[in-house]
Image (cartoon, rainbow, N blue to C red; front, side):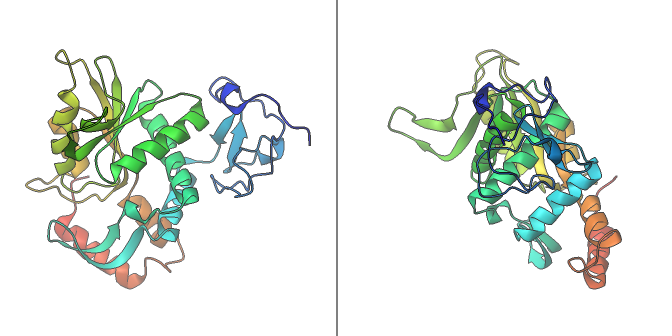
Length: 295
C-alpha cells in the first residue's frame, strides 16, 4: 500500500478532516485503541472504519462507537492491567473497601500510551479544546499529565503543555522551585489530571500552588479536573461525592472517565460476572449502603 509522505505533525486535525488517508505503516489492530506493537504510527486505512471501533482519520484516532462501549473498553483495560482490583482493601481513610484502584499499576510504555489516549478523549469530550496546560499533582499525576499531553497532540493536533508540583521544593539549578515542567502564567487555561479522589485533599493542596503563579487575581483559569474513576462514595463530612464537593468548593467542574455504576454495569449487570462475582456484588452493595454518595 502506498505510504503517505506528509509528516504526522503536519496532518490536519480530525476536527477539520475526516476523509481516510492511505495507511502510512503497518496496520493497527482496531478495537477502541488496542494497538499493534509493530508500528508507532496510526493506521489510515478506510478498512478501519467500523462502527464501535477506533478509526484513524486525518492524522489522529477517531472513535465512532458509543460512549458506553468506550467506557467498557476502559474498564476492561483497568482490570487487565490490574489497576482496578476487587477483594478487601483498607483505604487511607480507614474504610474497608471491596475494590481498589491504583494508577501506579500502569507500568509499560504501551499501557501508558493507551491510558493517555483515554484521558485525552475524556478531556476533549468534557472540556473541549480551549486548554493550554495539563497539571498533574505529584506523584501519580506527573506521568498522567505527560502521557495525556502526548496523546492529545496525536489525537487532536494541539500542543498542550504539562506542569506538575514537587512535594519537596528544589533549591538549586535552573529549574529550582516547587514546579516541574511549564510554569503556568496569566491567561492560561488549565485542566487538573488525577487518578482518583476520595476526599479532595489533593486539590486542596495543589489549588493554592496553581493560583500562586498568578500575577493578577483570576489570571489563571482552571477549566476543570478529570480522574480515571469516580468512586461515588461520600467525601469526609459530606453526603456528596468528592467530585461534587470539589465543584462546589472551587467552582470548576470535576469529571471522571468512568464511575462505579459504569463498572458494575460492565462487569456484573451486563458482564459475565467473572470479575465482579455475586459475592463481590453483595459486598459492593453493603459498602455503598454505608458509604454511597448522593446521586
